[in-house]
Length: 325
Image 1 (cartoon, rainbow, N blue to C red):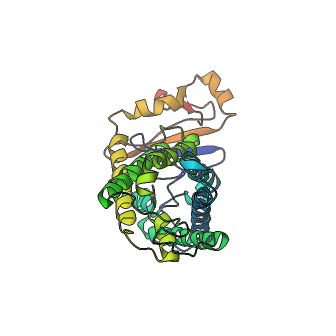
Image 2: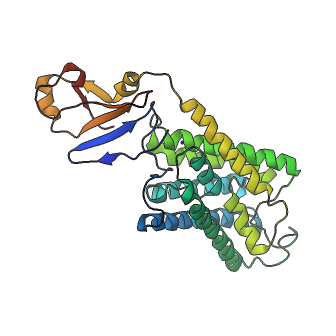
Image 3: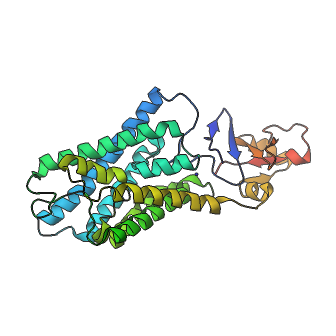
């Protein structure tokens, strides 16, 4: 998830880095430059806290309501609540923090050089805090105090294996692999339709819960399991929901990185977004926003394919006007 750089807007031009056809901007990865402690970083942490809190509170509330009031929500309903909440939070907070809401996602992004390692601890702390406070709020609102860990009293909103630990470990690995693979595909690769990233990721959450929820609880998120465990002190098999999602997310990110590599020439990568224009048309093109594409060749020698907003003497190689997608 090659090094990521954001699209930098200038007036009236925009510069966009393209490296081997990979994305230069995405909603779930962050700029790797800048100081660790800054107003921007604090805003990102707040965004991760709010997003994780909202996701855990809404999703787990659906579980409690389903178990307490005669199963009116049903498994598809619970899955839909989780998926919709993830989708809404991605579109609400993705431009602020990247909308990870999951330590496994943050670690996987960092391992693929799409996120700075020195920000991972802060993100994980915000995510676990959001999950823990959401679980505490659920305990207060629904009065979940009686014999929770034994599963014979009040509803436990944490995750636990309903089958063998091996089966649950495998299911958590597969579901988190699916989730991270989709995140990498739709949110970090410019060739994908980025505007639908939130919908695709939310739909993946729904799908994963439908086939794995009754077996492992479909955590896919160490913070989702750790928060309730801390509130109720239910630590049995908790390791499974920390280790398996992390391994699954790393595998999903690395697998998509293999698919991201391309043997296409830079002209093939650029061509869909650029059109040759005549000198006569260039005068009209100058009214639009012009983008200069900075291309990095295999020898890491950076050069520019030029575009001119004015009708000046430029050679044929630079006679390219790029309209922003």
